[in-house]
Length: 242
Image 1 (cartoon, one colour):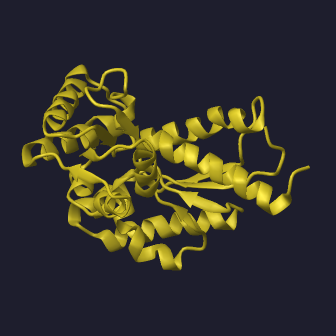
Image 2 (spheres, helix red, strand yellow):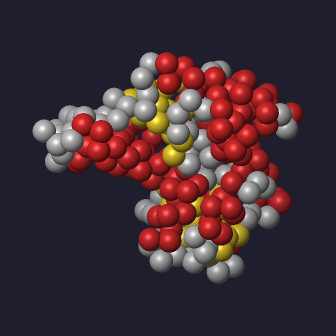
């Protein structure tokens, strides 16, 4: 246990289910680093999910970025030291606004790529919204760490996107949705993948190592744990050990 004052984590949230899982993970697992019931200070801001969805459906990535930046500024104003975003899809807009951000960001795909490389994985299947899996959010970070990847096919992208946007973000967890995603993972296994990225922060609510045909990289919890590590390490560096 360390006693330095941890940094204040700012959560730029998008959908409730993914953000809640990330928040809970920080609070519950903080005790492992800081002692019973302890966790870093955490603040969260989210606009209406409808605002993000409108931008996504119209391809307005500038609008997505401005929503993220507005949250970042509000979190900076109340004392956050750095930012995380428990939503893989909207990271697609991060490069356009990062230079104007008042605080540094911990990138979810970078966190996942580091974990995959550390575990000696080679080829990862990508699951997430169609906006994510058709983007370079993960490929860029994975290539930087010498990792290969596979995307869902067109039909899989559409159905997984439907499950996420019509069910998971609304807190609806149907057995048939779980079964479908497990079939996609099984296909990726036969295509040579040795792990799967749960690249929608709600997917870990229905898919895990307990039921997946492949080892999972839970982007939500990995991001939360990386934020915890940064908060504690940076806090010690800033304040010193007491």
